Image 1 (tube, rainbow, N blue to C red):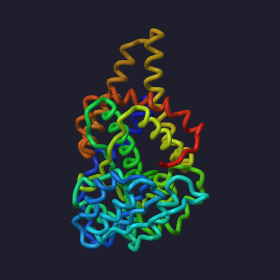
Image 2 (cartoon, one colour):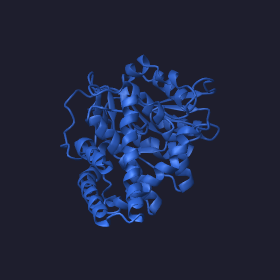
Image 3 (cartoon, rainbow, N blue to C red):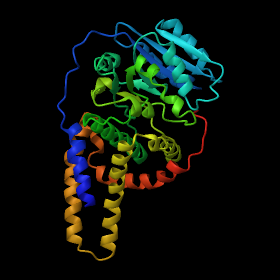
Image 4 (cartoon, rainbow, N blue to C red):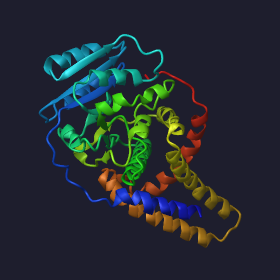
Amino acid sequence: MVAGIQVLYYLGIFSRFAFAKSKTPPKSPEKPVSVVVCARNEAENLRINLPPILEQDYPEFEVVVVNDQSVDDTATVLHELQVKHPRLKIVNLQMGSRSLKGKKFALTMGIKAAKHEWLLLTDADCRPGSTRWIQQMQAYLSAKKQVLLAYGPHEKRTGFLNKCIRFDTFYTALQYMSFALSGLPYMGVGRNLGYARTLFLENPVYQKYPHLLSGDDDLFINHVARAGNTSVVVDKDSFMYSMPKITWRSWLFQKKRHVTTGKYYRFIHKLLLGVLSATHILFYGLAILLLATGYEWRTIVVIGLCRLLLQYIIFFPSMRKFDERDLFLLSPVLDFLYVLLYLILAPAVFLNKQRKWK
């Protein structure tokens, strides 16, 4: 039964992304765009990553950077960049909000300062993979499609940790893009996201969760995204790359902060994601238990190989679309380790200690 439920997810949901035909961007007039970036003590990241955004091959856009109470050289770096790039608009915050935790207040101030209706959001530690990032992204936004979900891969580096981080990023994207294509969009990632400014201003989602440090991206999308107003873009020109963590401890800390928002999703999303995670854990747990108790091993091996074959069938085209093909052969090992990640992060969902966002 557990294996059967997993098969239903792979065939009924994940296949929608894996086998979706590549589409050319919709033909529409080029829209003015505001790119919004929040930064606290990000001087070096801004020095490296902001120029590729400011130098995008696109006729009309601005880049709004919110300097959120930085005490490093962020202000100096932004001033130097503004001299060279008049498209850069700087919003300096001297004080944070007493009610909105995390970067919600900074993001709100940045969006209010933006002059264009169409917003693209990313982070200070991210860089676009192409000079056509804005061009590619804005093409999928329209009066009907006011939310855009895109991919934010991590840079490829040596080492097993890098592969684990990139598999986690891949599998998370496979889930939220597949669910979106199935008519059930539930999240996006703040390092590569687009939506209408009016949609944000008319839906004060942050006021419902002022105490949460995370959730500025996925909780907003969870509340406003619907089957009819959400687009998905998968094209290398639309990718926004970020540097991965370099220690297990820092990565797990980051993941713990992210998973705490899941319990605030809409019920249908919590149910579907909960069943997916539970059956993923039970599949391996029961297999190990049955083998240890002397159950017919041939049956377990056949079921395991069938699931592995199906996983390969789904993962291969999906990893090709996400440009993560080097993870393919290692995916069975990474898939098993993902179960351990579930178990490590589970307590964080219920025991959430508040910390500063930077």
